[in-house]
Image 1 (cartoon, one colour):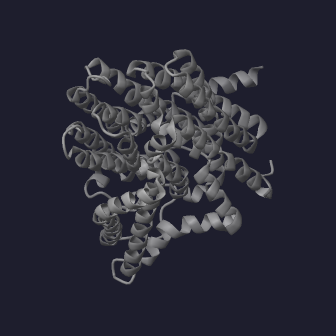
Image 2 (cartoon, rainbow, N blue to C red):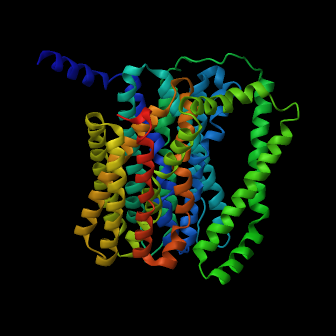
Image 3 (cartoon, one colour):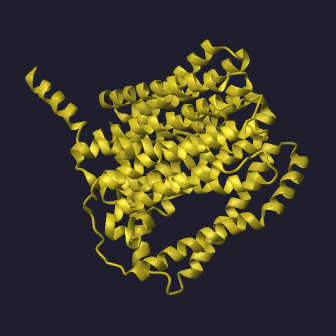
Length: 514
């Protein structure tokens, strides 16, 4: 039919729009860092002889993605001297973020984790990578929202996701193949191979940096009602830096005490995973309490600008609770925090599991990373199509149920061992489900977001989405040590069951009965 043909032609032509093409390259840039913190780094550390429980602790560096809402308002408002005047607000922060991501990746390449005391240096570089990569995500989200109208947002998101997956393929499968080709294996560890691999990964960030220098600065559709001086912004920054410093200081000062307490508690309960979870939860609670007390004290000083803080942090949260009411808003936040828990916790240690049961890096790269990538993309398209035809809530139900079911398939692989056919089957089901569930979940988060506070509210949702799963995922190595792989996979699957009840409670409210 002619009208439909015209729509298809217009859609295909829109994919070549400069803003849509830009998001593909930004997606690639954003997809590079994540697996260099997770799976690729896990295999490097494992080959270097680092204990499995220590390997998974490194995944906590990605918690920066879960706390990015804390500095999202700062990135949104704080100008960079000289650079902001030259490039504009968004491009200036994009360039800084991309160059510091590259520097962080290169810093990791300079550390051999097999050397005594090297893990502390590597941990610092990995944390910096998590922080700078999360900052890049904040600015890319803001750029996407401000650079085009509503009619292009869906295409820009699709382009971004495609680039993101290719970036993850490059840093996931690409780094594994490269390290293996350069001579590092589970039986013969080679630091120069991993050093070269990470150095080359740092160079790939030039794709994003060059893109930033080519594009133009987007307009700001929602300028602040109040104008602030550079001095006020610097005071705002000083409060943030003081809070981060206090948080890190608490962790440094309590490190020895935490180790002693963990050992004592392990002797009492005879469960190192449980004792580690309790001790680290107490450290986190103590750090948050001290930071809160510090911010409260600073609020009584000239550093604290009530109007700036209210606009930056309070107004977006107030808007969300006003639109949905306190009870429903809290229920929605709990759901956002739990929906991906089963999938993410299992994913932290999946590559270590594959190698432990005998799969080579090339097999992992070919099946899990490359083939799995296409299954995830297919699942994403399927999830989007089903959400359009049957509604987001129904697909959320389907995604939650299938996540529990497909995670149980890892039990099959654990008992079967090195069987490439079973690996293909498990990865097909798992990645197809992950793509489907993610597509529905992103659509749901988009419904929750107010366009007047898109950047900050989306940062809050995306941070909350990964906070609890990544925290628990850091203990996955200890859980495997205590439960074994079959017990861990059963536990990870069962964590997804309560999500079905949360969806039911949300669906009962009038706002989501469709």
